[in-house]
Length: 311
Image (cartoon, rainbow, N blue to C red):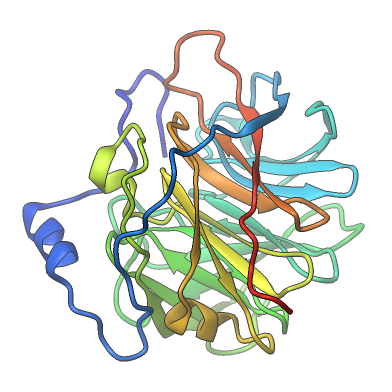
């Protein structure tokens, strides 16, 4: 969570030992191969619209819809920000949905094939939470439903959420170098707590894309999204997006064994959100702006996708 007036740093910890480990980490079985990604000078994203609502300066999750966007803020310090915000195609807030209780640290959004909106309340900068949570907002519902979850191997900070072809949420941790993939080990229960199972890990390729946080900004996962047709999935860092092909609905298999295409997202102020466009032909992103110069507004950007393999 980014507090107003704090210095501009990403919300994660890094030690010299962790950096050495991430650099020297050898690939384990079931982990996607990784190596330097050569790319031409990256173009900036094309502006779509600016978000001018003063409640939306710490946007950490984005979903594009047929008639606009859905966004959430990072954290919940201010009551006015504790909402799911629905925007029109010009980035104007047209509706908000309140949480029935206070979330801890909301970090990403995902949407299922049936239109269900999932909110990842999974941020844990200090790695001190006993449980994390998902909020499920069904189409037409007036309030999201809370589902609590526990990791099998201790606390993690996580900022990316995906939904697989079966409608199951997959949490992707923020660790640099290799990120853990976790999925509920039992059916979710409204208001109850169920365990998560670790189902794999993904290691993203190295790049040289410019970003405010240099090497570290290119290594940590800050958001994710699934394509509308379910055949592709993307994870992003502060610097880049990585798109994987999904065969036969096997999202976890795609992330753990696939080799992604890279899309540079150069020099976004604090890029944490990503979504596919409704037609699946481009990526949309938006940055937090709480620590930017006064008057800076969050701007949704559009990036063209590289061609994938023939279908």
